[in-house]
Amino acid sequence: TSSPGSSAEPSGLGLGDPAVTRPTYSKEQLTAALPPSELGPDVTLIGDSVSLSAAPTLLEQLPGMLLEAEVGYQIWDAADEIEKLKADGQLSDVVVVALGANGTTHRGDWEKILAAVGEDRLLVLVVPHGPMDWIADVQVQMEAQAKAHPDRIVLADWDAAAKQHVTDFSADGVHPRADGQAIYAQLVRLTIEDRLGTRR
Image 1: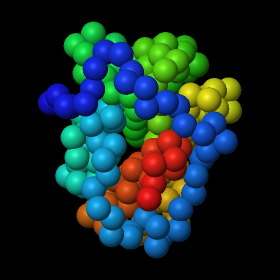
Image 2: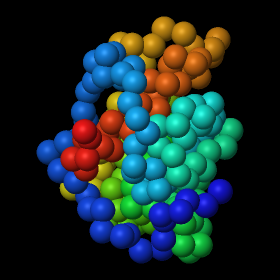
Image 3: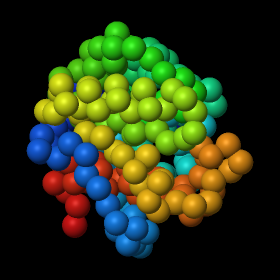
Image 4: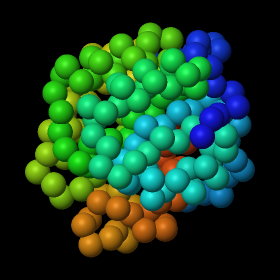
């Protein structure tokens, strides 16, 4: 799927406010009825089955976004996917990496992701949620990357939102059902808007 506003080179949307590194939201904010965001064409999301299940609500919140999500995707898959999209002229100004539900990774993979995204695009890391042993390790790694690169990275804290505001998950405790999918999508949207200062 191509996105109408994306290109090989960033269009100058900017990296936003580096002080906004990990915004938090109330349930009221995450469930408020909002008109569709105008930022959709500026967003590319690389995700696994969690974001794939939330795809309809993500596309409602951010129409025109480019959603590349597959069951089983790992963090180490992200850099190659980003490079491919960039080579095809389809990588947007905001790159969301929503991975970690299928396994952990190491610093070298994050370095590859940052290099693929480039210094002129905003990288949004969606903090994964779930009962698996490796989730905490992925969370620590994401936090370390955000701390090391506050000018380039913002965290969308799905783990915190899920623990505080979502009760209905599938049996694996990882994949939210409809209400949680809507919160997931709104979290991604609000995190991007607040980082870029475009929320109305």
